Length: 117
Length: 115
Image (cartoon, rainbow over all chains, first blue to last red):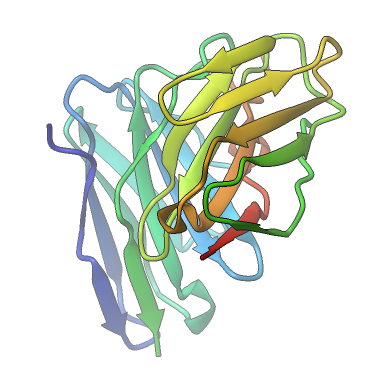
């Protein structure tokens, strides 16, 4: 079975550039999560979707960050303009519908290592 | 907010049983406890999940006392390949949805298995 697929695996770009990270969740999963991992802050949840609808984006650090899920098989996380402090590993995860009463296990991709110079 | 506290690191030897405890004093009635494992350059991987008492699967056991304010992940007979970071996650999404920031993995426990 194909797991969660993220692209690119590595991205190096200069500050001020737009960065787009992509995620394909596991087929049949209807919750999708975007995380950011750094040494300082650990693994932080940025936003999650249920059935393609953003439930809450209060974890998104700034207006420079945006996420979309146009259909059940694709999501993007965009940073515009990018800054050096955005350097981190960004993970996408998916699960069966994740609700307060149904904490479904999440399946993670291998992440995108982003470096902003 | 069901914040979790785990030891930062633990060392063990091959073949030993390892127990990692996580404290979650503010766990809510409907929260499940989930443990993940993360290797370098990979995303976290689900290990086990439980609500109360004991859960066992092919790789681990999870012990949860009656008050549910802590949980213990037990790895039987560890090998070198079990060296990884282990995260305890307590699901906490408020009624009707809510702040994504409340679903946080914390710092995890770095387990190092020695030969």
